[in-house]
Length: 266
Image (cartoon, rainbow, N blue to C red; front, side, top):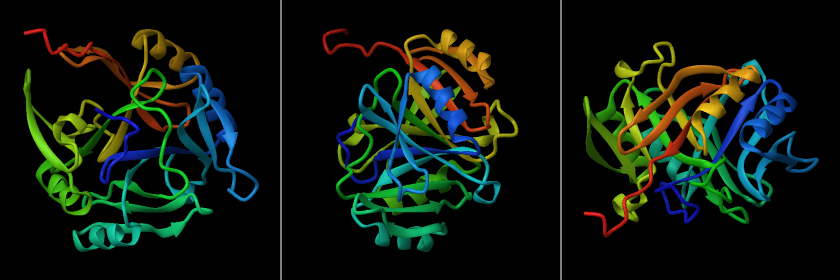
């Protein structure tokens, strides 16, 4: 379960790069109820999307030279320099070398063996996002990759992930969790791109945000200029999900999670 009780290897931040930060602010305010607060005059335009005063994500305006509009997910590292070195040794790439972020922590942006970007965040004053698992906040992650086994080996070496195969109708889903916490700390899954219904998506990270009504949220996204990648779908034991993109092309997913069975329900 994805929470704000961060441990090494678990997701602890995410942000969106967009060519129109004002448009993105308006879009995500309407979709998730987020407000936006600037990180200050020295932040290069970076700011925080907030849900009831708690930081749900970050955002910034980017150029085409910095890559396409997208969400970047960050994972906790006790030592950003060491993690970046491990990524290179495991066949990955350092896209943005580790750096201090105004005393709030150290960050870097890396790419795995399939070229998928991801971030690492070594906490300083800022430990990570302030809300997770609630409506309007991050609740799950999926990595779409051409080689699940290779990706699992890479992230195990770099971030200490453990994997577990879970049977679902039609196949097996590879779940991931940090080394500390075991399966109770499960936060995401690894999915082969060969089975991706969005044929042109390629290898990428996909963040899921919890919502109270998937269909109403999908309608709102379309009304605001976003696109449906995969329409609302019920997954037994999981919930109702949809995959979308914002008006600028950044992909994300939404879910109304199925109620968790209580311990006394046999």
